[in-house]
Length: 349
Ligand SMILES: NC(=O)c1ccc[n+]([C@@H]2O[C@H](COP(=O)([O-])OP(=O)(O)OC[C@H]3O[C@@H](n4cnc5c(N)ncnc54)[C@H](O)[C@@H]3O)[C@@H](O)[C@H]2O)c1
Image 1 (cartoon, rainbow, N blue to C red):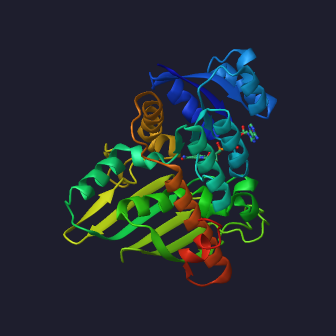
Image 2 (image 1 turned 90 degrees about the vertical axis):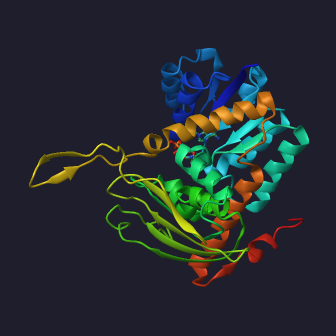
Image 3 (image 1 turned 120 degrees about the vertical axis):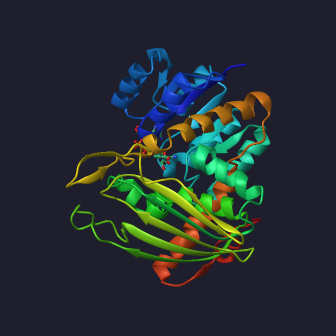
């Protein structure tokens, strides 16, 4: 069986997944596109060879056609819940980009809709499928460095995020849009849920970029205590002038493990004795996680066709959102915040 996919949101992340589905994932094929902006719909449709009759202005219009089995949702965060719930209720498998949603209530609605319909719900945590992160995870599980005591994770990204992604009301800000992966990775690599967080933020470049959004920050440091007693930290910088940087370090009872490299290639070139070594660094997230994006889409197709156990579930997405909400409360109220303050406020949580 080939999984027929409808991509919703033909922007930056959408094009990365469209490329994987078109060129790298034999079990799936991109058959339809949805985007609310006609120019984006047309240009992305042309780029990936989607017939004009299979390009739609809304999910509802695509569902009326109904020639697909699954959706890949790559729209802004504030649209995730209605789109994911509508798709699941129509019996479509759902791949949903991070951050899963804006609130835990929205996460619960998505999880319940997917469970009720019996469809796969996978969250876009591609680091879990990156060869380096995945190998490190397996080696930690095998006990190579003993019990993790500290997990540090960083994401520093180039480019000022779009206005909606800077606004705490529309997106939960940088902790969500840039650091969702770190919230997920620290929990995944530690093997324990966060219990308490404390966040400090700073705004160095907002004025330079004419950003007047309330509570805007472009630097964040998060301290985490996990339920198992382990510690964690997250570093976020965006915009970051030097490139795209995503790394992690795990200190275990018997050793240390470092994941990732700031260098985009292992080739180091020296030609000029005054300038020393020159080596390229990663410039963008599609470049750094090229394999992670392909492998997470392969996994989605395998979950649907082979029943492979899901490695990036709605529950994982919900925990990352819980971390973001606790972190945002911490930075606004300038105090450590227990996850229970966030989790206990949700009915039937
Ligand atoms: N996993 C990753 O590494 C990664 C990287 C970048 C973005 N993302 C996530 O992907 C999502 C999209 O981010 P982006 O940077 O691609 O944004 P983008 O603005 O480049 O693209 C979003 C697209 O969605 C369309 N759109 C908006 N509302 C819509 C709706 N209701 N129905 C149909 N189309 C709609 C827009 O017209 C636009 O083309 C966000 O959740 C973001 O956090 C994930």
